[in-house]
Each structure stands twice: as C-alpha cells, then as structure tokens.
Length: 111
Length: 116
Image (cartoon, rainbow over all chains, first blue to last red):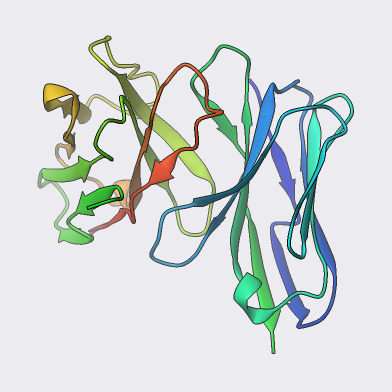
C-alpha cells in the first residue's frame, strides 16, 4: 500500500511567523502536487514539482521536491491570515492516473 | 460555466434512503474522478472515468455505491440505502487527459451529504 504521510496534521500560528509542512513516503513519485482547500470549496492546485531537488516559489510559498522524489515540503514565510486553509499533497505514481493523497494539514493563521 | 459544478451543494437524508449526486465537468475534459472527504481530512478515491474506457471502480467502499457517466460528460454518483457512515463531502474532479496527473485536477465545490 502506497502511503503519503503529511505533517503536521494541524498548525495554528500567529500572522508573520514562518512554517513548514512535510509530505513523506517510501514510494518514489514521478511528480507531486500541492493543493489548498478552503471551507466549502474543492482543492485548488498550487504547484506541481517534477524533478528531484526541484524548488519552486509562489510568492511567500516555497515548495521543494526531495532528491529521491519520495518527499516534499511547503514552506510559508511571514504567514498571513489569507493563508488559512487545508493544505494537501498528492503524489503521482508513474503511469497511473490515480494520485496518492496525504491526509492534509489544517493551517490557521491568527491575526 | 467555466468550472466543475456539483449539485446539490448540501443533502440531508434519512438512513436507508437513496441519494444521487451530480457532477458537471469542465467541457472537453475526458477524465473524471469522484472522491470522498471526511471532515477536514484527505481525499479517498472512489471511481475514475476516462473517455469510453471501462471505469475504475476499485475505490467504491461497497456495492451500495455506483456511478455512471453519460455521453462522456455529466456523471452521477448514487448511494443506495444510505448509512450514517456515508456522511461526508463528495468531490468531483475533471482533467484534460487521464494518462498523467501532470494535468491539474479541477475540483467542484463538493456535495456535503448528511445521513441522519
């Protein structure tokens, strides 16, 4: 069974602080996606990382794919209240249309 | 509309009743997924449709669950004899092509099902 472990499950911090969310697996992924989901809505793709060691930046969000393509991290700098939401990682296994989903990190940024 | 739409947005039903959930994917998207999400949790894969191929039903939790996709577009997920453990948000997603999820999955807003 392929698993994608996401941590922490819950994080509540003050506006302006930094944070990192992790996704780890024993499986190798051909790509890994990060989504953000707000209450009452479906997940929305933030980024896809493909190459081992790849780093992508989206404003204050930095995404990294591990060298072995088994893990990924999302780092948020100077968190804002608008960053509040459920962050999900999802890994793609080569030649398989199914994504392996993490359980999500519920992030709350307090003003 | 430009996005994936789902209806109803909320459904409250009594245990034992049947429910039907609808998904309208983005026009031109050949692949469609149904997921189930318990409160604040990750996504549980239910079923996958790709073009005219036989659907992958491997994620359906029991034979009370079924789904169809008519004309390669609209999909309905039917739950018969609903149980309280079926209560969850049911999400639908479509992609341009099913061979690789390099193609972003576009999600609808979901249907929140509550079984009393």
